[in-house]
Amino acid sequence: MFLQIKNSRDLVKILDIQELIDPNNDIVHGQDQEGQEEQETESFQKENLEFPSGESLPRCWLDANYRKVSMAH
Image (cartoon, rainbow, N blue to C red; front, side, top):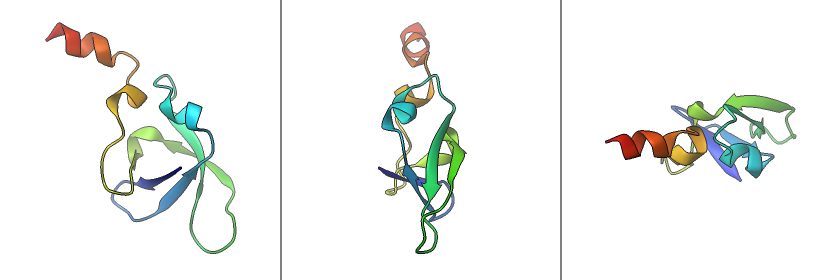
């Protein structure tokens, strides 16, 4: 799966989807897709990533307590 770094056009290939959807992880490991050669694996803050369409990541991927907050209102 590819995500985009916010405020840029840089794509990141996500290496572990489970890591991405786990709201207890603040970071995800991936490879920046610059140039033609495969890049080294790096850590990316999930809050700095979005879908290539510009859409934000689902809140349930970012916040382990998202249900508690929304039920309180």
